[in-house]
Amino acid sequence: MHQQPTAIHCSLTKARPQRQALAPGKVWLVGAGPGDADLLTVKALRAIEQADIIFYDQLVSAEIRALFPKGTPALYVGKSKNHHSIPQDDLNQLLVDQARAGLTVCRIKGGDPFVFGRGGEELLTLREAQIDAEVIPGITAASGCATYAGIPLTHRGVSQGCTLVTGHAEKSLDLNWQALAGLNHTLVFYMGVTKAGNISTNLVNAGLNPGTPVAVVENGCRKNQRVVTGRIDTLAQLVIDEAVQSPALIIVGEVVSLAEQLQPTDWLAFVQSDAPAHSLSA
Ligand code: SAH
Image (tube, rainbow, N blue to C red; front, side, top):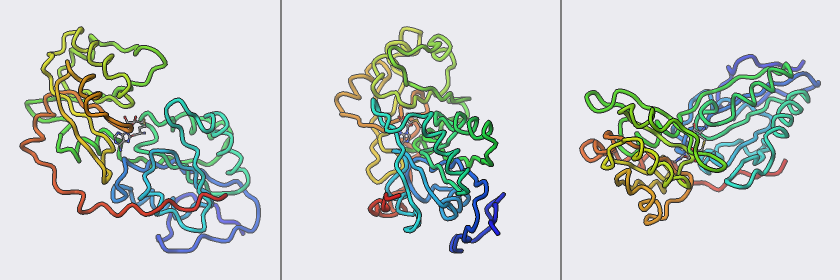
């Protein structure tokens, strides 16, 4: 009989059960964290191990892809800037179809599925289609990148809060800059590198101290992590001078200055080697 898992109980090494009949499957929407495979949750790893098929996107690092079981088909469904390899609607439908075919699907994406990850949209589609689905949270880039850069997102007496903001916009950013500048706490911009000038100008015009420290974390929590720091008023020039590449996160706030004293630990020593990506054949 087909076993319909309602929770993942098997050990990481246990073989997947043989599926003998078509029955509704299940979709796991899995957060992979920012890159370091050691930051995967145990639950995420179990979902990877149990899946019949894996759909992953661009932010799922090579070292995490290396953990995909050799016999499990793993398909790239990622998006990169200006290039959507598969439209979101088609992807949603793909998840529904695979689950209806009786498969346990691992839809794994960078960071946390519910933080600028479109996990909510995918889950809505699955709920509407009455597919069994569950979200496994992951460490979001703000948390992973800040910590690996030695920057606490909040710090008593320095920053009493943190706001996560998207820098993604077709044209100019439509944000409440007055509110953001007035919060007097840490701001973290996802997808903000190409809009660095826009972010800088708007925040300073809205009253943020031009000398407010910023850090740009490129490839955070990966072997090639790079952190560059500067001031909010010269953020655009910093990004150009340092030729910052995606993925990168912009952290704005006085907490950035704490990195010098806090000195991030040598986490690279713990990062597993970048093994080649698992075979992508379906
Ligand atoms: N769901 C993801 C965010 C997806 S939006 C999460 O929770 O982290 C994509 C943006 O996230 C990138 O443009 C970048 O700003 C940020 N990001 C994701 N992973 C990153 C990494 N390893 N290093 C730096 N920035 C990262």
